[in-house]
Length: 180
Image 1 (tube, rainbow, N blue to C red):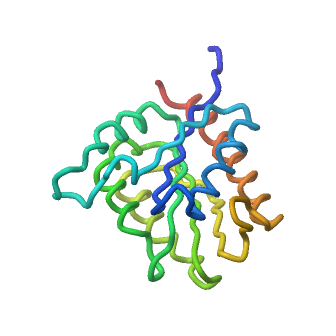
Image 2 (image 1 turned 60 degrees about the vertical axis):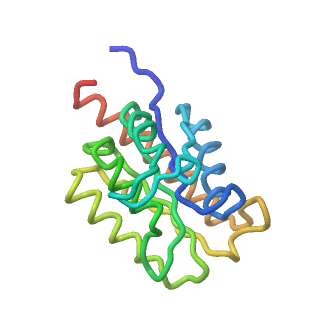
């Protein structure tokens, strides 16, 4: 069997192209390419993915198809009130089946350091409802970890690199176990 580069989808569930989540996503794309992976960058806001049951979620089907073709997924979202934002929830509701059984990594941004446990509600949903393989490393970054359009924290940059490496490795190993 010839091993091809893993295809990893990076989903930006942030509010704007200039948001902190967008900065994290761009950094993750670079880190994945450094690992030899193919990084597919997806912006949830660009697809107008609205809460389940509301019309006009134009991009949900396209995003679901793109996620279905990926070997792994990294979800990046802002933390609001110690939980995932509505955009990520809508992505999971609309596109969750496309992530079932796949490797999923998480990155979150927040205003303060005390919301780091907020990724657990996302983990529960992905792990129990979708049987996704959750990467045991997450990236949690706060406003002070950024300097405009870049990450200023060495620790956060290192965590991004580690998440990219572990996600790629887990995706490769899972592909060896499961048929395409």
